[in-house]
Length: 108
Image (cartoon, rainbow, N blue to C red; front, side, top):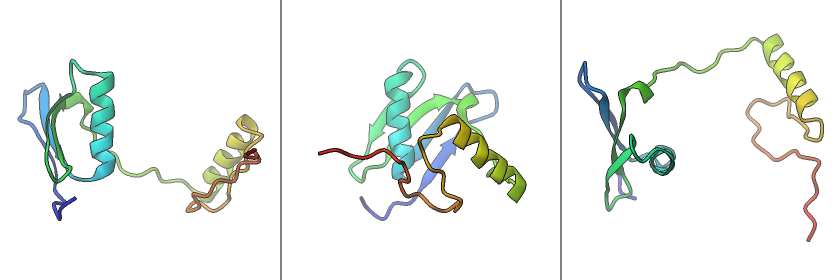
């Protein structure tokens, strides 16, 4: 991938379709997946040599959403709820932990 770091969402008021261009891989992958699941409304126009993608998507898919803010009490409540729903998985108390803490064993 090149040094292209540009991610663009463009549409005009009143239009139904937005043109998006993403170089960030997580968005490229998301657009590819959406195009597979919604080929009538998510149309890939080009995948560039640098790995970036240009596509048309419905304007109603464009959202600006701040990150979820939780108090420590809300976070604890969420962890407890998840533990009840998924009792066979351990939920880390570290919100930055992304390690696999499942009790499931991998058998060769």
